[in-house]
Image (tube, rainbow, N blue to C red; front, side):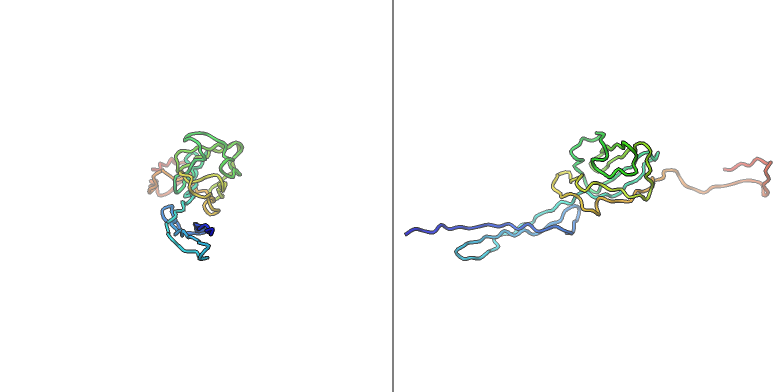
Length: 186
């Protein structure tokens, strides 16, 4: 008498991560491992494990730098820098929408977190404009993340941080001012 071979099928269901919550760049989801035996025609969960989705880098800020000839973009986690070495100068079109940045704008990774954008000829960008990263441009440093979602690749461009001390202004002068008198303002 011929024996029917015993066949067991295993299935691993990875949970979908659409809108799943991330904490510190990780979203942990339960994965079920199931077995199916044709003889019993049933699926049985035989194990479970945690699967970690890694969040893609998201823009924290895009700000004019001192001198107003460049922008600094900071991300919330380390990026793969598109596989480029730090300080390598490259065409900004590889990573972002260059509208308003001027012809031949150049980019450079200052660190895994920071991208420097140097304006090209005749830039028109101003604080309040929208900065848009290409959705397939960046991945997490370990390259385990999916590409960034739309809300992670757009940010408003901010004015530069002022480093000049602000303080009270004192004006000393005569109680009456005429056009012929020299006045000292301290």
